[in-house]
Image (cartoon, rainbow, N blue to C red):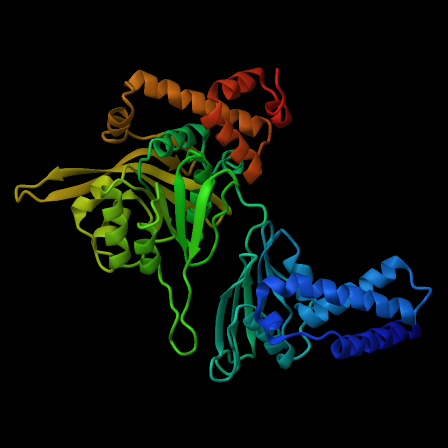
Amino acid sequence: MPRQILESYKIKCEVRNILITEVQISAKEIIDPKIVDTLKERFRKKASDILVSKLTAIDTQTKDFLINHLIREMLGLGKIEFLLNDLNIEEIVINSANEPVRIYHKNYGWIETNIIVETESQIQNYSNIIARRVGRQINTLNPLLDAHLLTGDRFNAVLYPISSKGNSITIRKFSRDPWTVTDFIKNKTVNSEIMSIIWLAMQYEMNMIISGGTASGKTSFLNVCMPFIPPNHRIISIEDTRELQLPSYLYWCPLVTRLPNPEGKGEVNMLDLLINSLRMRPDRIILGEVRRKKDAEVLFESMHTGHSVYTTVHANNVTETIQRLVNPPIEIPENLLDAVQLNVVMFRDRRRGIRRIYQLGEFIGGEQESGKLTMRGNILYRWKPTTDEIIKHGESVKLFEELSRHTGFNQNEIDNDIKEKQDILDWLVKKNIRSVEQVGYVMNLFYTNKEELIKKVKKNVDFEGLKKND
């Protein structure tokens, strides 16, 4: 080992030992995730004082490097912290100490890194650090840990021998820069015509279900649509894992479920939160995913009692969505589906690595001879794979009729409204106005000063021009 590196290593070890001795940490600080940042600052200040006293000639760059390395090693996840700070990485996986850490990159998919965790005990130590932050335990008797961090990241750990290769960790990162409607139109996931129809439906409190297979983009699409909600409507979202990110102008209360503790107590499930949300005077309810009959019954009853509801379900087309909802395990009465005005179906083309709206449809019903109401799908738009474009498939039977009843618009006024919204969306794409807060600002302006926004869009101003008075 070169002498300079050896000396740096010795100094680092000496400083670490002093920090362990002199910086006292209470039990509350260990388990309280809100204090972690404060704790890091205490370590940073003390480490800086120690380094300056030991090495009077140390430069700022070297000092900061050593301090950051110490903090990552003592309070963080070591080299894994580098991966956590990369915005392009979606997933981080440690299979064992015998294999390199693997990541899932937004652009390149699964990649093997050059990072190797040295020992199995180090992997378990990382698991213990996270467990303490969320007030949980992971050990031989409780070898599984599923935790949601304050940052939104999801941390999962499985200890040996349950994970037979060795201790395993999977971190699903919460997107710091989520998709917006601008991104979806630019990458052809959807077009501005369809998004303007969805915008109009959401503005006037139509209910919507988003369907699709695994990793087809259901939650991302749901998140993209949320800025279309008027700012004076109270939104309650219910999720297993915090994935939605709404603009700050929205009146939003996010709720997340909680797993039981090792004694089997303290669980808060979706049904608990769904029932509780109805007591919170919501205008809009967002449910992460419908999985069980009881959840679905409460959700659809809330539609019939005047709440506007948005949720996702695993199904591959409009017809399959209906079948999934009316058959076990969800199995809700078919007549309840009449409250749903729109069904968006997402699709992932694995060969080309693209996601598209596969169908935009509605549920319409008709009585059989028995008098029972049966529902069927009516497809309005569909994706054509050969040309990679979304084309019109059929006319609406229900959506525009209900919009007319809710708004008093005739069909010509509805068409003009859709065109107006389409112009705004096309302008967002043209000017590359794409962050959550930027898109949120535009939508807020639409609801608070629509005439001003339309005037600025027609003048083709950029985002900064929106804030300037003429």
